[in-house]
Image 1: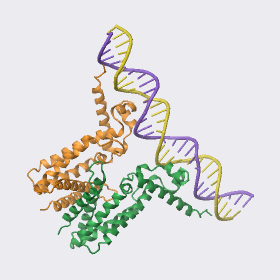
Image 2: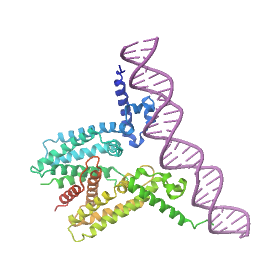
Image 3: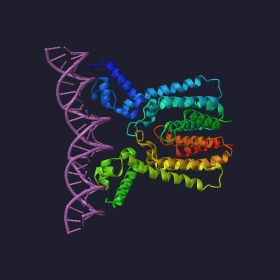
Image 4: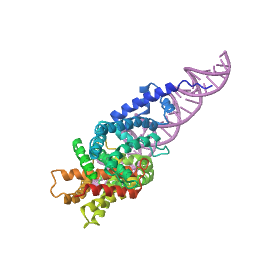
Amino acid sequence: MMARDTPQKRDALRETLTDLAEAHVRSDGLASLRARTLAKEAGCAVGAIYNVFDDMTGLTLAVNGRTFRRLGAHVSDAVAQKSDASPTDRLIAMAVAYLGFASENPHLWRSLFDVEMSNDRDVPAWYLEELGRLFSIIAAPLKELHPNPAPGEIDLMTRALFSSVHGIVLLGLENRISAVPKDRLEGMIEYLLTRVSAP
Amino acid sequence: MMARDTPQKRDALRETLTDLAEAHVRSDGLASLRARTLAKEAGCAVGAIYNVFDDMTGLTLAVNGRTFRRLGAHVSDAVAQKSDASPTDRLIAMAVAYLGFASENPHLWRSLFDVEMSNDRDVPAWYLEELGRLFSIIAAPLKELHPNPAPGEIDLMTRALFSSVHGIVLLGLENRISAVPKDRLEGMIEYLLTRVSAP
DNA sequence: TTAGGACATTGAACACCGTTCAGGAATGTA
DNA sequence: TACATTCCTGAACGGTGTTCAATGTCCTAA
């Protein structure tokens, strides 16, 4: 009854647009995304974008989805290569990997937090899932350090440590305010995690 | 030669616009600032804004200047009321005061970091001065904890601690991601600072 | 007092933005 | 072939910050 052999084309356009948007965000930041520019580059009309995404925020979320997965893999790899190190060293390895990813993909990384989601649109499920996966990686070394935690303590420490490292990376890469050299940032992270996870 | 008794009117318009802009940012966030709305409320033409500010970013910086001063006073007061407490407790008092200010003035506080300053415009001098003032308050207890620091160590610790607390407050107030109750955030901050500043 | 000039003020116009939607194109089915 | 359904188009809409020639205002100097 219905003409249903075009989902392939749909998905192709989706991917093309996501590719182009990702390239723009990577090199010039989220604020440089233009619907018209994207349409011209993709060889379609502006309206076609809205056939495939709800709006530009939806497109941004598609880009962020890729970034989130790459970030998760990057941190996972870093800790996997140190599977026999102490819990503290594994925490440091993850945090330094987080710093490395952010500093090598500054615009893509910032887009994860700058995307406009205040309005009715609620956070996509995979956003929370991906964040949960990241948190569970952090929680593993913490559980070794605290074999008998109070209820919710591990979760609280996980969030606290992630937020702290995130803050150091965020303000550290914001050169307009602090301009801290990258090796200094690693030193800050090592210092913090060593102290916090000391026996 | 020149007509020079209107700086009063200039300053009056500056203040009026800053007042109105501050009210908007306070209640609806930085993104809700509209040049036309402001002009209508101030009883002037849109162009008049540009006689008094370089652009809307300049106006935002004026609002942020006020916020920065209030934030500094808030943190100063908090630590002044605990002048005889231990260095660690004073660090905690400052951090909790920072959290309190951010949670009671969420939009004004976010505007401090969301303002667009990437383009040619360089950071105003008072921005760095105010930040330096805040850092020096944090550094005082740290110097007591480390009487013989290596060169630059105090500065590094100051930035690390500020960034960490900032990260906890930032992600903690971002309800879309974490939604941590405020007393839990205080717990996280206490935990972090206690561990980091332990002897 | 008056003519001149240096500013302030105005608001229409400009360039740009994301988003919409009536109409044409394309492709399936009967 | 006739129809139904979807896709695609791009001009148009309402919004944004910013500009600038024209006008107004007011002090200074003659």
